[in-house]
Length: 126
Image (tube, rainbow, N blue to C red; front, side, top):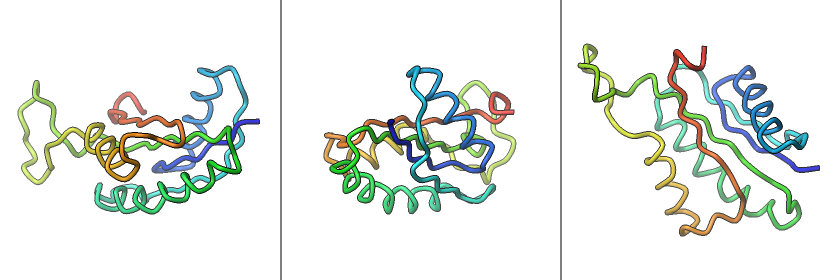
């Protein structure tokens, strides 16, 4: 049975992403570990979690060859080029590329564990 490590905002998100992975792969995954960051935390808390998570995943991959991961970071605090920003406190950026770059930097572009980065828009997520 493949194992899954998730970094999400809530238990609901964890269940959703597990169901998505199971549906996409056609295989039932056991949640080995699920970390949650609190709703409303900024992406620096998520980045901190990822920095601690990646070494654990790399270490676990030796004993668990069917280990996978999903990192979900909401995009609700960033802007979209098609819409003018009305809340100037929101930080612009491309969260998918930022998270991928963080992983590539730590794992040197050779991911020892297959994974996915999810950046849902709040409306789609609801």
